[in-house]
Every structure is written in C-alpha cells, then in structure tokens.
Length: 114
Length: 115
Image 1 (cartoon, one colour):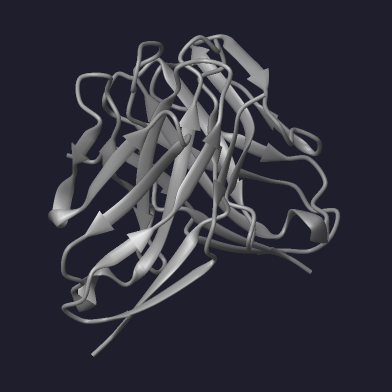
Image 2 (cartoon, chains in turn purple, green):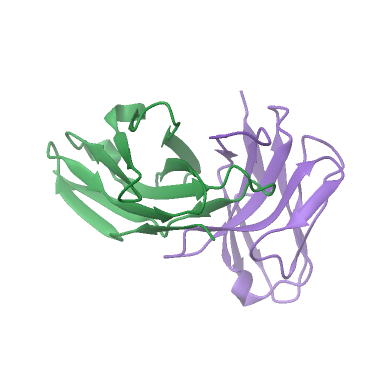
C-alpha cells in the first residue's frame, strides 16, 4: 500500500523559478495538507484542503499556491522561489474531523533555492 | 491558542537505559495529543495518540506516554533504549473543534543512543 507519495524527493531551484511539488494519497482521505520543516521549528502548516475543490491557508502560506481537483492529489506550487523557501516539505492526509485523527505523512521533498 | 513545548532539544542515553522525552502543552480545549517519530531522511510516523479512554497510552516499539491534565504534560517514555530508537521525536497537539484540523508541532527532541 502506497499511502502518501511525494515527488520529487530532492530539488534545487534558482531564485525566481517556479515549480510544483506533487502529493498523492490512495487512502480516500478527505483532508490533505502541506507542511514545511525548518531546523528547530518543528513543522508549520502552509495550506490545507478538507475536500476536492476546497482549500485554505495555514500558518505560512505566502509564496505558495494549492489546488485540489481530485480527492487523491494535492499539489503545492511555488510561484517564484526565494532562498527563504529552502526547507523540507511534507504532505499529509487524514480522515477529516473527529477526535484523535491520525495524519499520514509522505517521505518529504528537500528543496534548496539558490 | 494552542501550543506545545518540548523541553529538551537533545537527549542522549545509553543503550538499555530508560528514555524520557518531555512535552508540555497549552490548550483551551480538551486536546488531541500525539507523538510522532522521524528517522533520518524519512517521513513522520505515528508512535502513539491520546484518547480520553486512558491516561497511560501505549504505542509502538515499546513507547508509552502519560497524559497529566493537572500538569498539562504528555511525556514520552521507554524502559530500555535501543540503537534503532535514535531519531527525532515530535509532540503534537490538535484542537478537535478546529475546522482546519491543524497540527501544532513542538520543535522536536533529537534522541541519541550511545552503545
């Protein structure tokens, strides 16, 4: 069982370039989200979606865009990469709502912006 | 607003000795609480989660956590450390009434296990 799949695993971008980080899940989860992980700061929520066609901003949304056309896919777009976006990005999915809903995470994408 | 504080950024233990990773939370509601583990260059894996059924929660790989409401703590323990336990551990809180289902992560504790 695949779970949550992220591509690519590694990426180097030049400042100003754009790219899309892909995320797909095969568990039929309503809820999907993107986090970034920076040293000493844990993970911070970028954007999330509670279902196809519905997205909203998290804690650190600036410079990122998302869409959710299907239940399975939730791509994250960097519009114009900046060195401050150098980070490790994680996609997560879960059943929406309820107490103690476990989130399932992808393997992460390590992004470097030079 | 909810928050979570992991009291130690690094913990070093010898193999076979007990592990204690400390976590305090702040929440206006009865929170959801989790511990996740991240091995080097890997994604995050759920160790255990708090349900209101019991204050002592058992997880995978011999880990446990005790929910203490009076102390707003959810410390993670293991009786005997193994080399494979070396990883980063995150205490996570979530407000079950928040429609964003946002997870609030602590800053992480890196566990080092000495042979």
